[in-house]
Length: 211
Image (cartoon, rainbow, N blue to C red):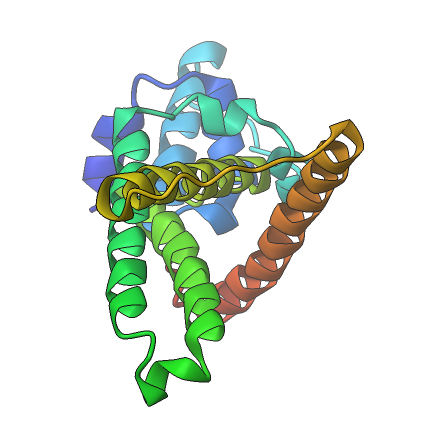
């Protein structure tokens, strides 16, 4: 496994390898070991001798979490497909629940189940990102993906309501209402991601990180 990461990282710059080492908690153990080995090789080449300078780095995971470039650099169409696919699946489950809404089992827990589903799909997106990119996403990156998922879900729901039930959903808000809603939306996203960050930290300590 380490050799695969060496092949994958050998074209990365010294700064990029140092970034992987500095954020070792967000990467697999084999990936960090591969980055350290390649960095040692680079240092040997640069010094032109067998004496290797000691690799010193500072763990700046918190500062990296607020760098959008950390997310943009590896963003691809696969992430967009993940967001849209999960939003479509989530809306499909919502429609199934809507069909059985009058059943006693759904009557009392309908809203709670929908909230849990949204939360589960947000976590699912982060898990897929981790598996796809072989590293954890940054805080800003996760927030961008959450926003994309929720906006996609809202758009799919509006289109679905019109196509299936011939209902047109209209949102009428003045400027103040729009500003308040936007602030509430942003605060909610970051609050959710702070909670997920704590969960991720706990999973790392338990050595079973999944996102």
